[in-house]
Image (cartoon, rainbow, N blue to C red; front, side, top):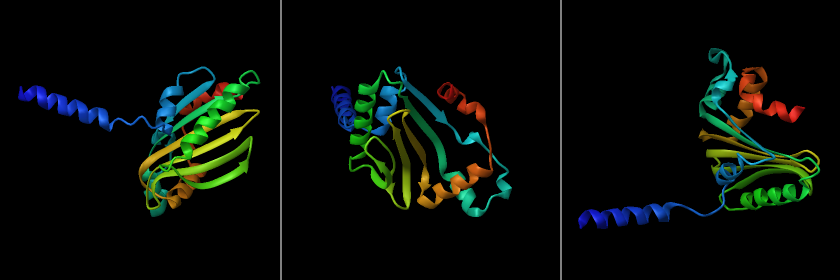
Length: 177
């Protein structure tokens, strides 16, 4: 009898902890296998660089980076309604209080935004959302530990001097054709 009550309580707690709220992570999971979408997970191993040549700030930035998830919707002229619907969904998710907008560029049908989850000194993820009605849109999640805006700027600098492992980017070749 005690095991049954314990199991019921445990099951109830599991159900309560599952959130039905939309999130960027759920959006990735729901759409990664769908037609017109390309999903890509990029690990830190994409960055081939001699770590001994990095500044302490660059090393901290590199160590804070865990992985990057990319989801791309390719617009083709025949899926305009779907494009509008999907960009609206992403926009609505990013309006949730979980996501703090850092920057917004452009407006209307073309533009980009940068948001983050966490607080300014301990960011769990950065979300880049860029859209162009003619080409489609991309949502990029950068996940890490103890990230901050300076780490992202340092990561950009690292990427500019690194030998990037292009094998991890092969799924994007279809977009370039």
